[in-house]
Image (cartoon, rainbow, N blue to C red; front, side, top):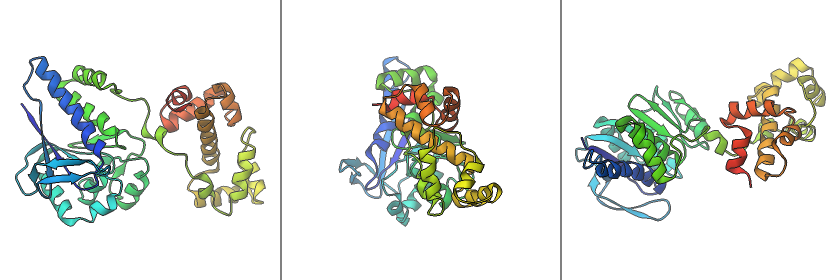
Length: 322
């Protein structure tokens, strides 16, 4: 059976949020037709507040061939993201259209910051969801009823799916194809499009390093500088407390309250940042990176990378090393 896939378009939406899933699903249709399975697996329709050209964030214009208000009855409803979701969620008419469309949809999908649109409509309340790594904290803070999964490439919870930044919409679309037509077809599509069927690790590996010095604040800025200069040495709570003339117990309490991190977690985060910088430079061998960043043993650094980034140091360097 041909499934209706409906894209909700609006000014300043991100083009790849639309074309990424579109090409995955269209490739599925092409391959299934070539194999004599079905003439058209997915039928695409493009909706906006009015019929006509919609200018995306890049300046590219796409044609909306349907206007909100018509009956949709979507099998898959796709909501792309935008660079500035604040403007979009202030558009009450658009949000009302999304709510109406969702009631007529079997499955609902958001790409990147499209999660904010679903959230503003109340569609993600009680569900697991993710968005671009730059926006996960804001999504969690603004919509506390959502179970935000910050490291996920995509989430699927019941009939609602959300994806991380931009290209993660491709990952999610492949998962939809796998659900509809099986893993073999999804693998064939990933080969045709030269993408991972399931990319290794989570989206944290793509994120910028934490602004740890800002977390430390003025009170612990000297401690932060001292840690940077002594990363290759063993550091414990007593050493850190001594640098700020506090008892270890009082230091742990105050530091955790001010930064939202335990002292041990803070030190590990700084070491992880240093290790990422060294791996990206492509210069020291991995065992030397472990020493320079203060992990000491390569295996200890490897465990931290897998726990926090979802990939090994070697794989991280192959992705991001110069």
